[in-house]
Image 1 (cartoon, rainbow, N blue to C red):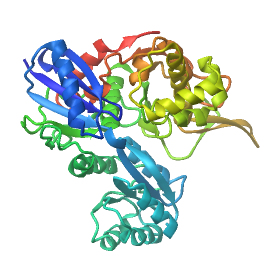
Image 2 (cartoon, rainbow, N blue to C red):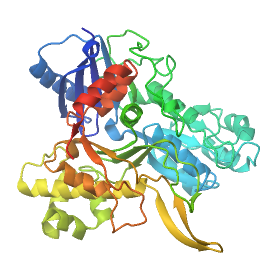
Image 3 (tube, rainbow, N blue to C red):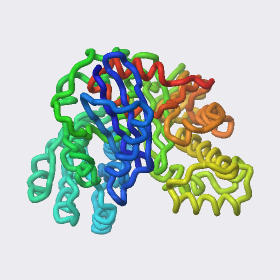
Length: 489
């Protein structure tokens, strides 16, 4: 037997999944409340106890982990202009599994630097300009950041003409030089920055998040270097998973945090899409709501003109203000309390009282009819808001030659598969009804959301775990996902 333990330290719950890779079989899943205040090791121990109760005592050949505990990977991204390098920096950051807590453009001011310091990011991504262009902005920003308080690492991924000078200005800080995220107008090069962000996460962030104390965490290196990843698939390509059963470097019996949880989910969705076709995945968590789309999203039909930077084939967006517990108030503010009350069938006063309670008591389960109704309303609104923000849009315009359409963002209208994950969705009684809030609606006719789709539910909450397993055995990961994801519509 080749048993692997896969651990996902979430902001609300720690999930553990046991698999037998030799038989591509799911052995068991369990979860426990993430005990950030007392150390995540306590929550992990509770989850492992529940797993052992289900499966009996198991020996594990390997233990792999991902984490979004204690706020996940918090990043600030800086670019030259919002529509270009700042957006490219945002794509690189979110694709690496981070949550953007600050996005800045143009030359930084002293107030901007003070804000950045107050946000206490885990990593800062500094970009700006195309290669061969004016390096003045990125150098100004490097100089402003040089004396900023705080111990956050800085990745310099802007105009290569100013890269080495920026590193000289940042010589007394932890700074890393990376390829430009936008080497020329309209050309994205975000994968090097993504990879570096994940490497810094492994080297620096594990201890900052309190994970080292969890029974001897040790970082296994070489995962991304030993084999090509599905991340490398180009837009429009249709590459199958690469390799089979390749071994992760290192044989430490300790727990190995390999990546942020959203990056693991992105890996799993890419692997699944490579096997079964383009998809959208929605993860409604306690603190954030993430949406993933695996498709080129290119304009369809004559008369459609694309505007803006090209979107990545594998795209993730994170709504840091929308979540079922820590960010429940954010859902109410975004949707409006009247809409939440309408969806829940409750009075606005009751909704307000319940939301305040949930925000203070983040481990609350929906055990009463009122809380179940409210959780449905919060989840439905989170799905609708997050997918509207993620999907592209189509605007009708009139030109000298007649009517035309301007597309910004990705066209998801032809996607035929939606995957639901996250505790609020996998435990809901009306999952198909919730998924409908991700589809095209006459209320938002300009949005390019899917028109119709079958709905798959990650009932065992294993997508993040399968993203981890992908680095050890892609064939086992895909077989387990195909058998574990359940179609509800």
